[in-house]
Image (tube, rainbow, N blue to C red; front, side):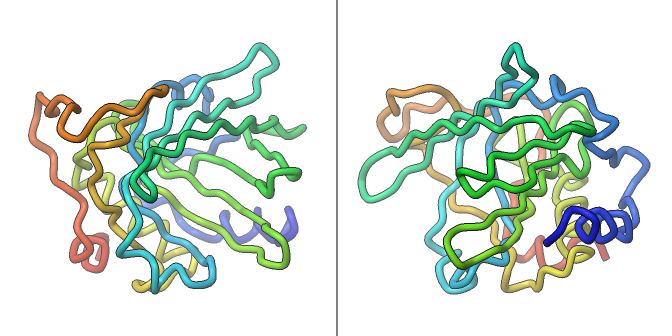
Length: 208
């Protein structure tokens, strides 16, 4: 998907609420710190079949001196915790990031409340497959109703079908943060106000 076509597509989707922002107007430091990726909409081949096996991912975002994003991620796979680091370079205009050598053609924030959640769009290309994703980032393991609604509306607006959306499975083996991965059950419980967990039913019915 070319940059002009992508811009036109994103512009055609009306902002679900007044708090939705474009990364072009967003200070990326608002995205720094630890996040849980709780839900994903993906156009990847086979995603609809495999989505039930996908776990919550932990992500830690930092900003380099060159205003590039450094993404440290962790996810439990095959009885172990996989940890990876990706550096995303800032594009010439706006706060949009990329690393074509790794298959990341476009990474931007679609909406956020600047505190608890962010909706992130990524355009990817691996070998002969090009696809995009929308992800729900949350500061806690439980997402607010507002975050779920915003994720669902952006996903639907960008053309993702219900079978292409997934609420990821909880996994206490890989919380956000640097390695080493803690043992099961070692992640402290989330305190504070009571948000709602993301469920597949909510993804299908939210935002109407």
